[in-house]
Image (cartoon, rainbow, N blue to C red; front, side, top):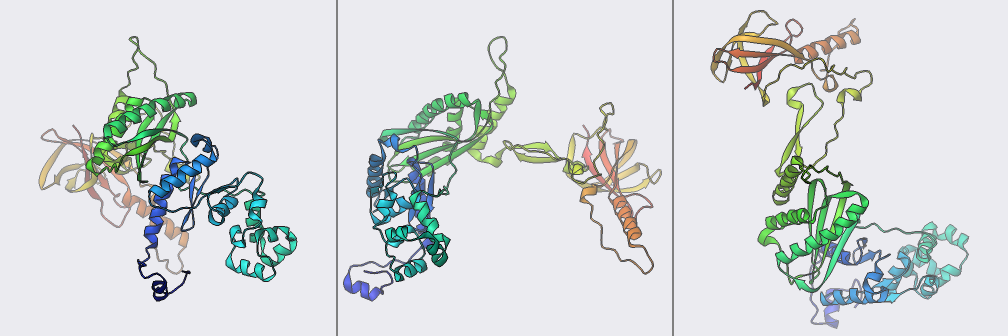
Length: 491
């Protein structure tokens, strides 16, 4: 059979042949799953086209008794999963690619790349079909013939890509692969003599691995901020379970509890297949570990650590968005001054006012006390009706909120909050003949700023209830009448 042959011709040669509709997406997913499985040999695994994988096994072969036992183990495991594969090992990616596809299960000794590649066809150099055809037309039919030819004429006639591939295969130029997954800074693993299928056994192995990991973290003066438990099944499937932490962790029981919560959340959906024969615990990110000072009885009491651990366990079971925390944000407007983010996220706040030169705000002196704000702030200010005020710029005499009329007996204020100038948007203006556009623009900008300016008042009604309300807009400064809003409640 040949590529491109018709189905009728193929069936004439092999009547029992099965025809299946191609599914490139499924093929890609299968190749990616095989790449994940190869993580048992090295964390540096890259996809090679539609049907190949690159594994950078530098520093890994001794864990399997050498390159030959490692290659034999890999081929055996693929065979038992139902895959027929060809593999090769070499000190360069190009030579390994050629060994896998044109020699089959061959190990090229360092320094022997030229002798190995010499008799192979041009396809072994990974060059385009067009260039191969042109090379063959001038009598260069093998990689060795290309190596023996003068380099300058080759570049002029066939382009630099030809010599690039040749030099990469011979090790004259470095060729880096692009791994699917980043390599973890730290990882420990356990190869199991017999596959395990019980979650309790997985947790015991996890805590044991965390104990080994703790010593490595202590040597680095770091703690884990994100960890992954990678479970390799005997049938080739790989499960990855990741957990995050609110603060750097080292303690094995704590790490085990986080993965226990994660596994409990997965529940019956966690498929162990025929069991796991390799379990790896990897640290995906780290942070400096802060040593806590112990008290007189030898205990380092830290309420924040207890809260962080509780939050981490909830997040492991329910997800990253299950627990949120408030963080302050640079904003003049109260409803924008607080933002809720996931509990473990570190937020770097920037002073928005400092983003534009010449517009930085003066800091408030420590001796100046800020006005009292309510303990309950509405998510969005609610509009109220204010029939009358003593003076145009003064507090209301009474107001109507949610159909109830409240008479004001005491008021404090105003506390003026200007519009956020870095968010200001000037509406489109039409300049009449004879008018200065800059003057018109400044006048419109002043009116827009006045329309958005807020004057806050703290008021108390006849029932003793206290409210935080504001008037938006300034009298006489805008073509629209000011409006009133209720923004919060005091205790």
